[in-house]
Image (cartoon, rainbow, N blue to C red; front, side, top):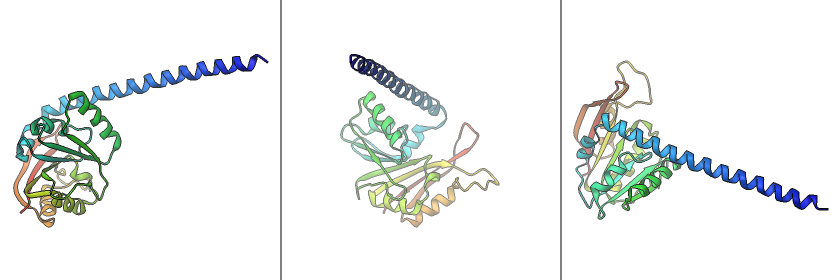
Length: 220
């Protein structure tokens, strides 16, 4: 009659130990991922030319900027201190896990002007006339419904607002439909009502020797 309570106590101890081990594993995995993201950011700083891309946005303290396709926040975390406490960054991504890590990184750096939004392939969930600028970096080629998204972006911008897109040019002779050429992106923007004001055909050369372009466009 005493074996059953003893069995329960033993089972409870084993379960508790497993729960502790699982918790340690999750914490270790999160910390390791954060360290990897920091390392990727440092490496990206060496070739991405973030300052040049941010200058193209032409933003200042107090502005509201959308980082569309933010991932874990490479550009969002650079924009937050630029915009100051009176400004606002909206980081939009389809991947909730990326936004989770961006939230942790935002907390670690003490930024309070960054909002996270889980978007959809056809809708980034941006309020109308709410942003001064929208950045789309290394994301445009991922968009399966570009014209629909650009229309949302257009409506989200205030009068005179701008959109900056930076992405990779298809290699010569490439048939990869996953890549988007500079001129195609410019045509897309004009079709959505934007006025293209700047084209940089060779912004930088990436780590795999790929050429990146940059586009700037504004609303009326």
